[in-house]
Amino acid sequence: MKRIYIVLFIIAGIILGIYSVKIENFNFGGNTRYTNEEMKAMLFPNDFSKVTLYNVVRSKLKRKYNIPFIQGVDIYVTGLHSADIIVYEKSIVGCVKYMSSYMYFDKDGIVVESSNTLLYGIPVIDGLDFGRIVLYEKLPISNENVFKDMLDITQVLVGYGINVDRITISSDNNITLYMGNIEVYLGDSSELNGKVGELRDIWGKIKDLSGTLYLDNYNPLKDNTTYTFKKK
Image (cartoon, rainbow, N blue to C red):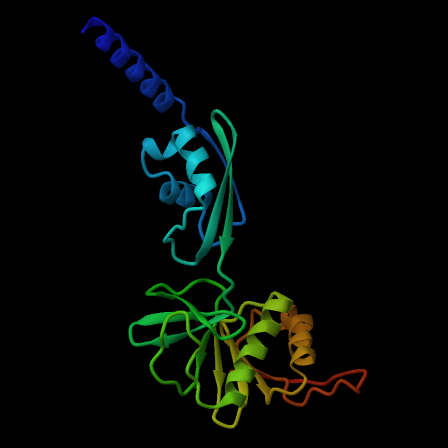
């Protein structure tokens, strides 16, 4: 019986020793939607989740985490008390309002997330005619031309690093951007790269104004493109 107690004591000591070795230094990378502290709270919510051996095991298992807007997470234990956490965010270029939620889609028009929260820097697309939206499926937009224009303008904006509050696409495929107190009328989807490039170049001159910028007459063959800005 004494030998059993000794074995149990040794096992308890080993468990206690393992439990006492925890990650204290967390180095995050790749996260822009959440702060480091927010990611830490979601991935390491209690003492057990910080145990070093536990994180060695779960890093090998490639566990999936049900975190909004996050595609995946890799945890690399770099020492007894340290770990590097690499966050892979879902690629999102825009969203549409559907019932009481925002449905976020990627560059291919696939709905990748549903949330009641509107993310900063992600434009809301208005003027679209769609049916029932299903998560992880393509946005059900009946007009393929409108669908293509939507994807084109959102990707061009991402490419130029321009944040837009809202985008409207009319039934005749004319595009208008809404940026604070300024509306930017692009007209049809022709020469989108040039139009958005022009917007980027002149934004510093008009960003504090209120009115409508007309870029529908943009012509890449002209050296000095003229544009019209009407103040409100």
